[in-house]
Length: 195
Length: 243
Image: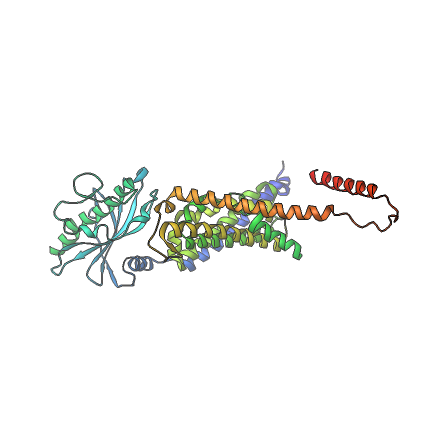
């Protein structure tokens, strides 16, 4: 096949048509992405609204990567809220089929600025877990009196037993996410405040 | 487009070829997102919008897109509209965007949309294709909303988020409950549809076998011969119907 024949062939037409469609679609999406992009601030405000039902001022807090990781999982965002509480985004693993769960945990500070327990736990996202819709945000705050020292949440071992109905494996990841936030609060967040 | 053609497309999309209850297409989002009526409406309207847009564009380009690359071209077009819907929902209705989760991007490979693009839009005019997208999408939306409403009422004692009563059977919010309600909906819809179709057919059949008055027939025709002739006509029509 000569070059001239190639340019006149059906194969060339196919390539051109696909390229043109892909280019127009790509261009359109690039423009719309710029117009409809959701900023980080807006996402954080949505999370606060999801937790409290209203918008609230917040302050971004910075920690090193080492401080944000512990045995239970990892922390991705920490904010100090207008009302003095802390909003922490935490991810825990070892769920059903190795899935993860990300939650927003509100950590209370008492009048002296010490750790006062968990106020609310709200789901952000969950992979491969299907029964998490049954979680209510007072499941963990009901155990605030017990969360002292080295006590954490568990599905079956030593500690405070919490299992969301019908989702034992998924609760592993959920407990890990909450424990991650709890350990971070005990070891870093409130320890740092005191220091 | 004639009125008759419009009626046929509407009837096909909503009832005769209802994607969820007759063709059993789009089962994955039907089972996963029918936990609440609002989710069903949201998913249904998103699919309807994508169906209309993709059908119109594919119909416009049907003579331009070579046959050999039609499927990749359709997928690019559908994926573009799905991405636009995702962006719009994320920006303006984040709660619906969150509740749809992974099933929103999966609309790209939804067999209802690809099926209508391949079997209808690529062979028909723009207006016909737009109507087909609209009514197929509405058929899908109605089915999803109906199943979602039943599951929400029985499983959560609520409808569109408003609590009706405290009584709830949690089975209906589970995956098994989704299969149960979906299967029941298919069975009831098909039973009712078949019955109506049989009645309609038998009426048409009755009309067709009614003997026409023979104005040229002599007045002194033998009554027995007349009956035989009528029976023959009936048998002929019946035989043609069977064929």
